[in-house]
Length: 401
Ligand SMILES: [Ca+2]
Ligand SMILES: [Ca+2]
Image 1: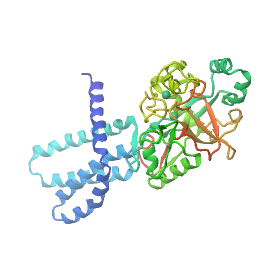
Image 2: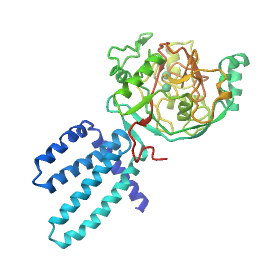
Image 3: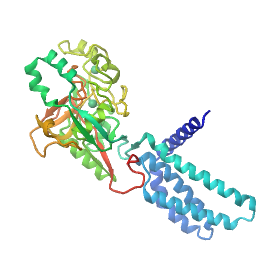
Image 4: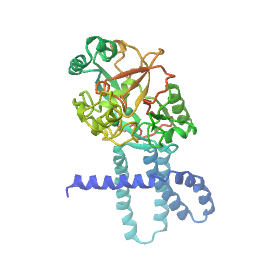
């Protein structure tokens, strides 16, 4: 096994450790509460007290990665402070020279381990403790936003020039956009997660098929409902949550690809990656225009059933349309700023992106834009959240910067 293989294995083990222990998110709260109380009661035994506090710091170190995706300054500071104090106390108590000599290598190994922990966070996932919602880090970058030339040709063939101008010309011109990194919900917000906010929410059903099961994406929510949800979750967290901008959404959906869909240009591969209007649905509703494949789900699918894109995001295309924060503007691409465009400050319609479970191929595209009135509630539209970070500064936040 090469050194890099060994390092990869160690990182994988550390990452798994973070995941397993980080799941017990209530423990750090309890530990923080009793940390100093226990410390006070053991005042006559400073070494014992320091060792106890050090072990708690060590635990918090791991859970911080799982819950927040980074380690805050105060956790790092208290860890190193307790570690130094403990070492001083241990050295003071030691009479055996051999053991004393062992301390230096031990300290070095510990430092190497602490360097590996940030490396273990490279996967960049955090879980919101309030709802269990998982977020992945989408690193900032540059991309071409909007339709490709090939895409336009195909759409004109399928729709005709008039309909193309009416519905799809707003996806042009293709233009360069730069977005900063952000956290994005790995999945669409589910009924279960939404009902932490509105316990009596009903996503209803479509033609007798329920859309209201816990792990299906929430629907029958307006853009205002989605914004209210983001604000509610922000009030429960140190993080600020919001809807993605349209540019953030398309950048995240493309995940580095320049093709029509994030899996390529062929619509008939959709069924591996997305719940769309498929041949199974056509059996139920024969008049539908569908993809030439079977995804096997005729209404909304439980989130995360299909393959993710390269950023590890699921259902970016298909399942439900996703509200974005921008007001829709037909000609916005001609004038939008290059850096972090966020749409106009007002308008009539809001943007929804990504197509849904009843969509034919012409909507199932990374560039496809939909406009809806912000108070519109539909069986086809849900949302996912993004987070730009916390209000608390941290050393390791946004590690790419
Ligand atoms: Ca389907
Ligand atoms: Ca979707």
